[in-house]
Image (cartoon, rainbow, N blue to C red; front, side, top):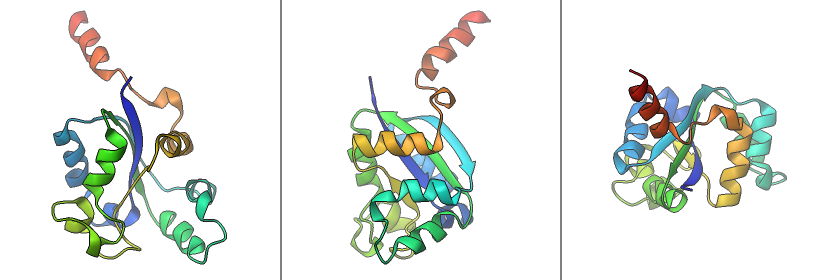
Length: 152
């Protein structure tokens, strides 16, 4: 089975109309988007998402930022997708991001860095479960398309 990861276009990316440009990068790389939704995270969702940072001085700002507007939540599937997605995103601090990465191209500062991606298989599964029910995912959508075409 192909690897899955969670990717979120954060509120600043949505507000700046970068959704299409960012999704295109994943699709052009050859990855499948098997879950996609636009939502405003609740405080509870944001707290679960950033649970490992609870108690740190910047934690309240993370929660406020993630709940400040809509995000695009995605489940992306493909070979080595976790590591490759993080490479495509670039360093958390945009000034350290390599040329051609999403954060190098679009992020303004570390606090508003456009995008989030899971850093491990465990984080991916935990974060996917915060935003998606399993039945909302379409992991075999190529097969579904074949079925639809066969039915015609």
